Image 1 (cartoon, rainbow, N blue to C red):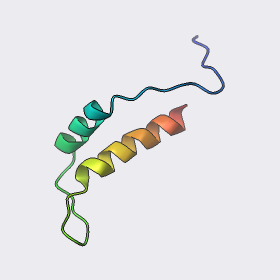
Image 2 (image 1 turned 60 degrees about the horizontal axis):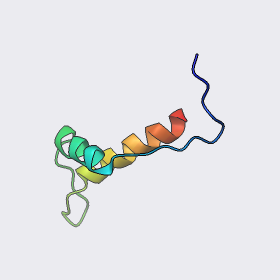
Image 3 (image 1 turned 180 degrees about the vertical axis):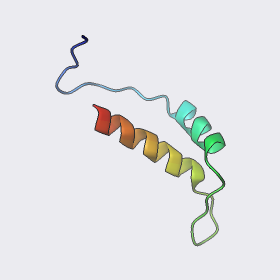
Image 4 (image 1 turned 120 degrees about the vertical axis):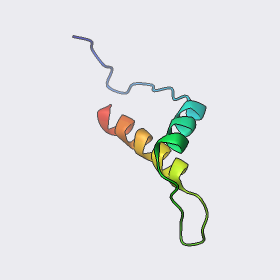
Length: 53
């Protein structure tokens, strides 16, 4: 089994996350009508990384 350090350094390819989130989520908007779907997806992916490590 692979040993994970206590405080691992995680590098994230932000452009890849943004691309995946933009195309994976439906067009979500906030109350002002601004698109927020991609940001929602990126934050969810980062949250899952934080919870995993």
